[in-house]
Amino acid sequence: MRQPMVAGNWKMNGSSSSVKELIAGIKDGMASVTKAEVVVCPPAVYIPRVSGAVEDTAIKVGSQNVCDQDKGAFTGEISGEMLKDVGCEYAIVGHSERRSLYGESDELVAKRFAAARRNGIKPIFCIGETLQEREQGITNDVCSRQIDAVIALEGVEALADGVIAYEPVWAIGTGKTASPEQAQEVHAFIRGKIAALNADVAEGLRILYGGSMNPANAAELISQADIDGGLIGGASLKAEDFLAICSAAE
Ligand code: PGA
Image 1 (cartoon, protein in one colour):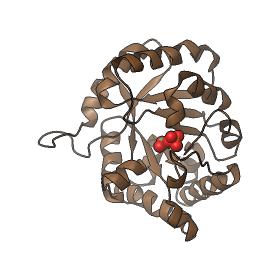
Image 2 (image 1 turned 180 degrees about the vertical axis):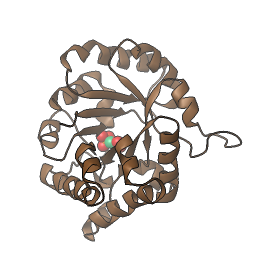
Image 3 (image 1 turned 135 degrees about the vertical axis):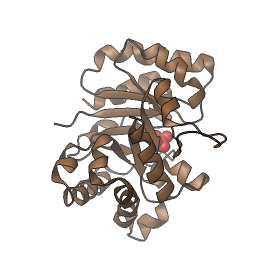
């Protein structure tokens, strides 16, 4: 049995006071979350504060990215060792906003995945197609290509050290969710592709769905056979909504 996971990607939102309030709200509701693994990914500058606040809880902390390099002249980047040092257990890599707005290639994402791993951080590896790619009927090819970059660099076994988040780009922040059937179809494809290389890795691998998941649609999405949780953007900024999704995952 794969443990369900719900991860909140706060993106570039919040302030010292709102972050304090949000994490306190999530902590307050955690008693009702017994099965799901809960992760929050605050903006980097707030990670130490959040790590401190969740120390005595089951809530885990992740970063929104990680540098592919470990140290030195890489202005603006944050290394895996630093993230580990301030309490990160997870790191998002390859989010579509990084790929599309900051030009991160499949190869760079794979290197960031590798950097997380070698620093003992579990990657939350994001993949997904744009609307144009879906309309062209190449959704599976795009996901395949993105996964292959990691497999080429790190081997298929490396996937066991993290989770995959399938996030159709057209569903992110748009209020337009993939239907449970649409999402399940891609999740099953991803698991099948990995199973062809290593059945054990595929069986154990958690594949999260991301893209406008909210308290109203979470249960149906997560009840699909190959959907093991969610990566939540907008709805993770309200403790009540985020907790409702965590409960739905159970
Ligand atoms: P959304 O974002 O839930 O706001 O669509 C998801 C994500 O980008 O990870």
